[in-house]
Image (cartoon, rainbow, N blue to C red; front, side):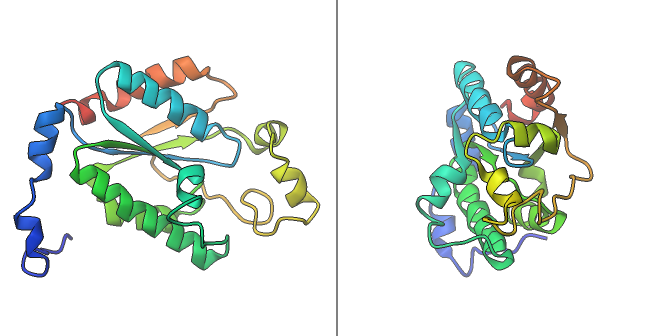
Length: 201
């Protein structure tokens, strides 16, 4: 249930609303949230999806670990509490982009249903398109370009998702992609067909 903030924050009644901005951009602002293990292909799919949407005339913004952890969340570590705070902040930033009429492509592990629930509650279920990048763990480990899985296996990194910290599969994602079985090009075509009605004005 959404809270009416107009009396608390009267500025919301003065600024140009989301609907007007969506009309200007000729698109519906949504959050396309890619969840999956490290190395599953979230960022690869996210970047390719942004390029494909841009080519079709959509305005987007990618949010991922690189541009979030290097700035707004650079003071956070990887404890349970910090993981929750990480997603809370990301979700609040996402809401600002949605209010601007912009489609966000969020690429984050978001390993548990509780954490994903926080994101959905802040952003709004009606704005949230969940895409599960379901690439198996052994494939993610083979792709381990940063050596993170190896360090986690050796005990050098604690609470690493998929090794000593759990990953819960999404219960009912709108789209599921296994990058071990589907090329990036086919994945993007498939995703677009699934989301086009939700983002087309």
